Amino acid sequence: MQIVYHIGANCTDQDRLLKSLLKNAEAFAEQGVKVPGPGKYRRLIRETIQSLKGQDPAPEAREILLDAILDDESCARLVMSHAQFMCVHRRVFEGGILYALADEKLTGLARLFPEDDLEIFLGLRNPATFIPATFGKAPVEDFAGFMHGLDPMQVRWSDLVARIRTLLPYAKVTVWCNEDTPLIWAQLIRELAGVSAMSKITGGFDLLSQIISPEGMKKFVLYLRANPPKTEAQKRRIIAAFLERYALEEEVVDEVDLPGWSDDVVEALTQAYDEDIARIEQMQGINFIAP
Image (cartoon, rainbow, N blue to C red; front, top):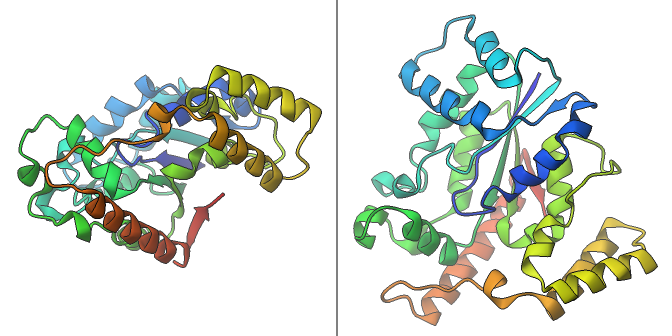
């Protein structure tokens, strides 16, 4: 069986991907792909990993978990999503390391299904907005304490991705930038489900409809009907054009509100992020989804 974990990151798509996947759950099930509701597995998996305390589960644990998650049904591919699979917001920088808990949590996730094909999906976000957003969701008031001594300028997603490859060398790892999701939404849904790029899906424009004006969305739909794109690249160019003209500023512009964070700091963090993403794109064994 293929076991798919969409592990976040924290403060990326706000469960929108899962909601779009669930819209297609019935159609995907016909292709052997199960997308259970989060109530079926999030607490169950967290508590199971905690109870194991780093040890391997009993031989029958896999079947017990699958029966509970799938209601005794079978499938070829199981898709599970939780932005906090690695940790809750306040622990993202614990120990002064980006996702220090990933080692323990991902190893635990893998132990639950040791004989299955594992896939990891991870959306990244510019530290210039990721750090303030995660801090804003964490029940802490001291920013320095939240960062645990880590200099924001030293936050590198490539370090985490490299650790995942080392921890789970047999797993397929798919990565993308959260900033690109309006352009690649449909592809993300299909790749998470493991279905053909030509498969019809529902919700391919779910995210777009939330970040452009109703007028813009109406014109976008009419334009596509009159001018069906012949390729994925052409469709993305159309989306980009409508975003440029009709995007809702409050939905696409992230306000950075941290003491001492000037425009120069945000620009430096963004430049470092762009360079970091370029490194990830060159990593062996990484399926990087770009517009």
